[in-house]
Length: 115
Image (cartoon, rainbow, N blue to C red):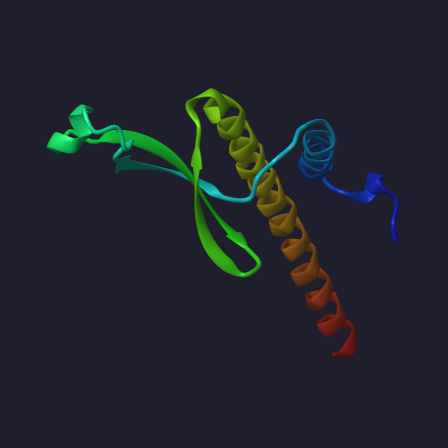
């Protein structure tokens, strides 16, 4: 393995940001979905059809898709955890793109040596 100095600056920065992000912040691999729901109180307006909007976390648990209701008190925290995951994913895509370009360049160099 080469020293990180051989990597392009944008990849070094992405790797550094990814490492920092994952070390400092919790994350959840999932997405947030707003869905109408009934609260269950017999005198509430939702029994007349005016439903409440609840926030759900859609994620996989043991290879099964789950929708988990997020209480209002936890919404900001869960939103931040999902955002952290999305930011990490974007950084990994950027790093992967750089690695792909290096792979293609190396492959082309090998092809040139054979000729």
